[in-house]
Each structure stands twice: as C-alpha cells, then as structure tokens.
Length: 200
Length: 200
Image: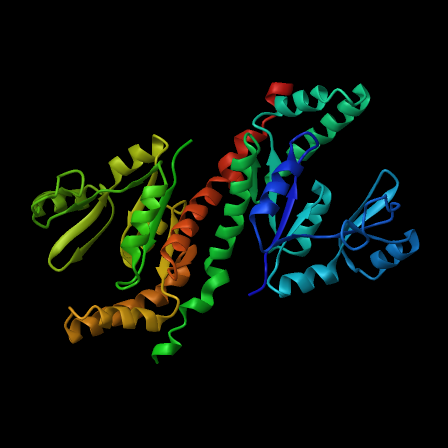
C-alpha cells in the first residue's frame, strides 16, 4: 500500500510551523519531504536532512531533467521538491508531508491529482494581520507585503481540498491527522478488501 | 453550520454495533437517527427513542407523502427514516448517524449526495463466515442466507465513499470519527472562512 502525499500551505502569521510540529510528533508514519535549495547551508543544518544543498547549476539541471515535482525562486534562491526520493518514500508506504507555498502546491496538484491539499488559515483574516503586526520585529512595509501575499493566498485557497482553521494548535493538528486517516479509508484506497476470493 | 449525515452499513457478523456504540460514546455532537417501524413495541423500548412505532396504515401514508428518506420491508415489518426530524436535527447543527442496510443507504445517497456513506467490513470475507458460524446459535440455512446477503452487500460496497475495516474496535471507531472530522474540513464546508471582509 503506497503512502499518501499531503501538501500544506498557509500564509505567514497563521502559526503553521507549530501545528505541523505537533502533527509530526503524533504521527509515526508521516515524514517531511526534504527540499533541494541553492541557498547556502547554515551552521547546524545537515545536508539531506534540512535540505539537499545544491549549486545553482545543479538546480537548473534538475529543472531541465524534470527531476523536481515543483520549484520556486524566493529571495534570489531556488527551492524545489526532488521527485525521485519522494516517490521512493511513498512507494515504501510512508506518508509524506510537503510544506510549500501556494503556487507550488497548485502545481503539485496538477501533476499529482492524488495529492491531498490542505490550506491552513486563521479564524479570521484580522487575526493574521494582528499576528504579523504584533510580532513587532517586522518592518511595516514587510508586514504590508506579507498581508498582500496572504490576501492573494486566500483567493487561491478554494482550489485546496481541505481548510484547517488554526484557532487551537491541538485541534488543528488533530484535524490534519483526521484528514490523513480519512483519505486512507476512501473506497478507492481499500477496494482490495472487497475481494471474496477466500470464499470461492 | 448544518450537521453532517453519516450512513453506515455492514454485513451481519462484521461487529458493527460494538463499533458504533464506541463511536457514539466518543462523539458528543453525533446522534442516532430514530427510525419509524411497524413492528410491535417491545418491553423496555420507548417510542421516539428506540423507534417511532406506527401502524401499517400510518407507514403507508408516510410513504405516500414522501415523508421517508428511505424505507424497507424486513421480515414482514416496515422500517424507514422520517425525513423531517432528520432535517431539523441537521439544520440545528447536529451530526446524524444512520445505521441502515445497503439498499436504503444507496437510496439515501441518490436523494442526498452530501450524505457520507461508510461501509464496514471484516479484514477478510472468511472472518465474516467464521463469525457467523462461530456464534453457534444460528441455523445453518440462516448462516448460509446471511453469507449470501453479505456477498451481495460486498458487491455494492464500491458505491460507498469510505470503507472501514473492523480488525480492531478502537481503530475502526477512530476511523469513523476521523472521516466525520475530515468531511467537516472540506473546503466547500468552510469556504466562509476565506472571506477577507474584516480587512476591507
């Protein structure tokens, strides 16, 4: 039985990383996908664990070879999802969680309609604004640009399969776990259980 | 927010009632739908709780008035699901569990495509056979007729949305609860969260 691919996006300020950490802690068979990036390795980061660190040339080659499920450029660096290790993990029955931004997520859905797309949002858009401003460590222009970005992301969220509202970390984490469980219960996933062969 | 209608079927011998009891115990907002029946009230049964006990004439009238979401005749008595109280409960935000046989379930799906259909099955068909024979209190012909019925039910199960395998009561109950949670997270159910109006 192959694993499920879950793709999660959510605007800056929604508290996604805290929820995902909880989900990972609670779900033994779920693994984070490791992205490839051209950005320099930082102290404490391990190649193949935090990222696959590659040169710009190698990344361009991966694009040309269609070795990436999706990729994006962000602040001058490339980030992408190598498809071969992802497929190997799924085929080994592991469930994979892909934490990527909206455009990448929608590209994944086009290429793999069986991917489960979850968009994480706040109880109201005002909460995102409050949270981004409340951090106090971000320049007003950056807050504004993140809000504009979040607004655009909300307009894309109807293309996702599920919406998880982060009004409570524990509850949001359980919702994501429930979605994974339910998707594995779909009739198409379990049709082999309907065989009567033992009885014929 | 209106509630969800979950319809569960499963062959005799699959252990459905034990699992459903566990589900009900664990899920505060989930209620059993009360069926109407023409069979006589038994000692200890309460009208409106176990069943709505009605005369054959009244039942025929309900059929004629299309007051039943589905109905079936079984061993000379009618059983059916009155639609008005079901709708009232759903509109009040209650989730409703409908434990009915396969033909009724498929009729519900035709009439209410938003109903969530779950078929409960055994790890293998042999398990059902073992369980029906193992009870030891059932005449061989009746065992055979239940097995034939179960075989037919398995052929209809691909029309259900989800398959829950009862290899473990606790696990099966959690799967049903997860399906309910996930269905409530569907984008179509939560699209109102995507409004940006607080911010405009």
